[in-house]
Image (cartoon, rainbow over all chains, first blue to last red; front, side, top):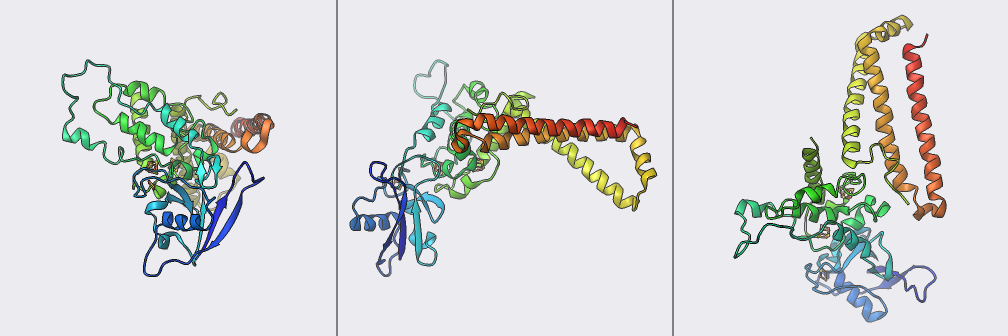
Length: 234
Length: 122
Ligand code: SF4
Ligand code: SF4
Ligand code: FES
């Protein structure tokens, strides 16, 4: 199996380059791409990537595999390799710190902007803020996001204006709090989103939906936000 | 830096609404014209003259023209702020974008005035 990996160490390399490895895959087993990266590291210990949970929970090992973003730990090699070849690159659009490790600051900055926490200025009840099962259900498909950035870094609008367009991940979370019956800041949240960039840069390309390893649908959430903005305006 | 000052309304939502509304007007105008041509078959100068002599047709056409301008400006502005940025063009990006926007505005304004002249000129 031929694996081509993006290499770049800003301290040493003048420019990024691709390094090729020939890897013998163990017979009768379908490795995950993360296991493959571990095999590469045995060959060349300077190959750098991020990972932690190795089971699709922490969101730290988002990479581009043969051009498609995903989590290396839950992506079988057989699913992404084509003709015995696999190219692994860092998530597109973010600055590279080293090899497959990207600087996620732009992504987090957008996440911070949407105030990703419950805002409720009413006097707290003695025990907890209750939700009906129906109200709780509205958060399904929203709260599961692990902030892996696979979606936002697959989104052309985020590549073009990463400082102004919130991006699919941030907007999914924005809607998660707009949809929460316990949150009382709906008006402020919407007021922060109606400029020409934050939400309206989404062109409905649906790359985000296509890559989300959790099967979430940011495009739909963005549609809901747009409808809320419309309702608020008329 | 890319900012929103040159956008159509400086508000994403109203840009969005304007773009959708004008799209419907343009679609209606296109469907009407194509349908009319199909029904009428071959048209000579007098037929065109006749069609455009109706006040409703003149209003409809003006609506379509103004819609074209608003619709195109919002779209072209978006494209310009997507692609003409420091990231690709360095320090001069703002200058290039301004030139691009001026060209767009001049073109659209020309369409508008030209259309008015065709409709009401002699
Ligand atoms: S649907 Fe919107 S957010 Fe998702 S990839 Fe496309 S432009 Fe980006
Ligand atoms: S929406 Fe999906 S792809 Fe995007 S950050 Fe969340 S889990 Fe990752
Ligand atoms: S290592 Fe945690 S999601 Fe892949």
